[in-house]
Image (cartoon, rainbow, N blue to C red; front, side, top):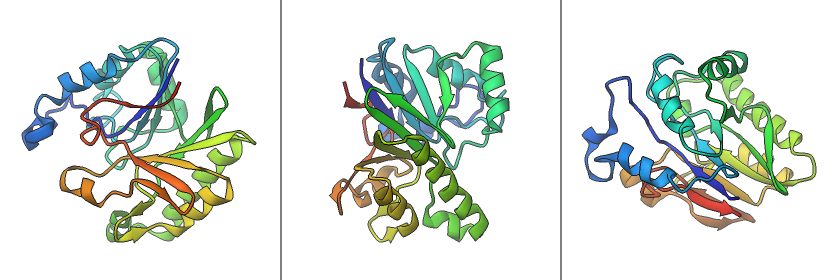
Amino acid sequence: MALYAIGDTHLSLTVDKPMDIFGGKWEGYVDKLRQGLSVLQPEDTLVLCGDISWGMSLEQAEADFAFLDSFPGRKLIVKGNHDYWWNTAAKMERFWAEKGFDSLHILHNNCYFYGNYALCGTRGWFYEEDAAGHNEKVFNRELIRLEASLKAAGEGEKLCFLHYPPRYQGYVCPEIITLLGQYGVKKCYYGHLHGASHRLAIEGDWSGIAYHLVAADYLQFRPVQIAE
């Protein structure tokens, strides 16, 4: 029994947008993911920190969901900025149920438990969102979702999973970091950063919270084990 995390799988088994075109670590990335995820056992939990599939709809992402569901264990999915297939919770859960993808669950406005750990999360917020002209209403909605997830955890030890890094060299999202501190989060896992951006990631303890980048290419496409 183990808890793992990985983000940014960027699967593209149906739509023609493979990450192999970027070369380097991304060459043959699906095979690398297949090998990396082979460590999963039936009692394990894997948290996927966003940017799961390039599919533009649930139907286009079906082959990618099938790929993830083919591995043992429970998978909890956080929304990423490129998860255009994302829909209402009811539609996603119904689609997965109809296709028999019983291991897939969304981590969104809720939390799940793994032993004594409460697994909380949401997409988060990043400077790219401000540059894209998103307004305060959208940002506040993300804060509400994160707080709802943290509240659902009760008094359990909380682990937070985001897509966007709440802290980055040259950038900080104080509202999210304040919430993490308010609810006693000690460990935060995030994705989104790729390639040259890896060097700008915040890793390790910062003001009482340990941050960990779990983007797939940063982890060599092997999920990181968080707990047994």
